[in-house]
Image 1 (cartoon, rainbow, N blue to C red):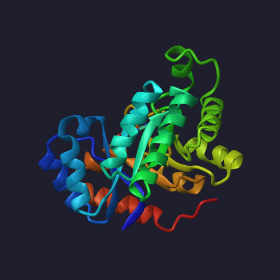
Image 2: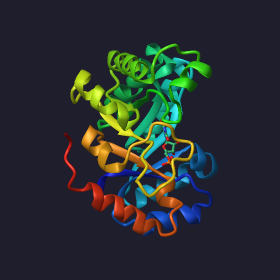
Image 3: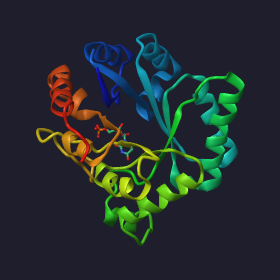
Length: 239
Ligand SMILES: O=c1ccn([C@@H]2O[C@H](COP(=O)(O)O)[C@@H](O)[C@H]2O)c(=O)[nH]1
């Protein structure tokens, strides 16, 4: 069973998705996000939970604090294990998200999901940061600044590229659980991802979890692709 790989289920057809989940018997974590939640909603989460899988709900909430708080509370009620918000939504929004989990835990008497603050999307490089987001700074500095804001807002999870994990570990130690998409095994295509690393490098650099989608679900044999990554990374130790 792999505790480090989160398989992104960005494909169509509930039956197709569940067939993939059942094929990947050594996968524990699955990502439910905009593609499949919009189409199949709560039903997909229920099916994953029925199979004792861990659910990473990646809807990247980014709204006014009250709306974000209510959405995060509802996600906690669904029983997901981790969820995302956008750190660029600001400290009031992030604090409201953290409050939602605190209130959920007090009311329900059980642990709520871990909130991860998305820093800079892995499809963004320095040029796009400047041209499209009007941020006159490097991706690395922006990730660090957003991570500091997340920490000040009592958020203890981050989404970043594995290229930034070493720097994040140096600055914040093990305070954050760090989840890294933009993972590309040497045998797979880069596609729309800009800040990529191989699975082994991601672990060496300090990722707690890697999110991997197309290199697995678009592979001719997804089970073989998953197992190849799992075996490649199972004995890799962080530097
Ligand atoms: O910065 C981010 C945040 C989230 N993602 C999500 O991860 C997967 C990656 O899929 P691949 O097919 O392996 O590229 C996808 O669901 C994204 O929504 C990200 O890529 N970058």
